[in-house]
Image (tube, rainbow, N blue to C red):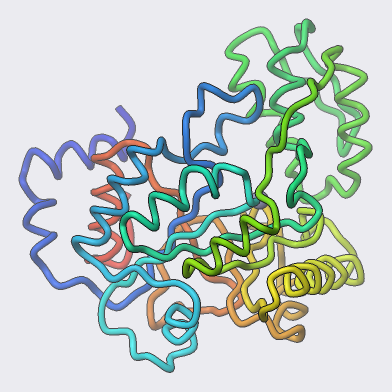
Length: 333
Ligand SMILES: [Zn+2]
């Protein structure tokens, strides 16, 4: 049992979770992020981008609604800017990448619960069957007949395929996400040659502009996730500026409304930096989201680095983390 699981089990047994739920929450914005909602086992690609099943997502929304206001769009923007005073914990629910699951699974569940969410789109992916690098890496590694993969890019490394294949996928993905991996195409070229497996053809994998317009008309917020989903921290200043400008231009042209939100691709430390934040600010983005965990409190509220966390797939850990963050402003483990 991990430290987290142990802490959650103790909380449950002691009844402390139920007791903590009765206390007033602290001022803050707890932002959760999903990539794909649905059945992870059904995909031939990256299973780790599935953050919840449809039922688990529905349960999460109902739990949030019972305890907190769920905000998006201008309501969220006003809380971030301080226009609306922050007096309790608010929840925001966001989705990165614009997978078709957003439209088919998450959107109907949000609507049925009367909640608004924020969806970050990559214009290059919209309406296509494109297979992004993380999905390609997952497929090629899972289906490789080899026992190990040897990389020269960005630094020499050998990754064993002998043990748990899903763990090997994570190891290759970690290697790809290194801040010094400035040539993603070269990395993928090496992987394709090494793996000895070939990508399958697929049907459409990302939402269309029509679907995005329908979601927006129903109260969802649409933001930018850059033009090509490049990892900004690995790019030159000019390339970063292009990603942020081009994506917004395309989304605004298709949705006929102003785009002011941005989610940094990958979103972990090193996937963006102060230079990225300065560019986003200069271009007029009012809310930019990272993805390495934490809660946004009045003393830690950075509009160009709004903290987001993954929702825990385990229902008890999900509840424990939500309660602890909203009542204590941090996780004690
Ligand atoms: Zn993404």
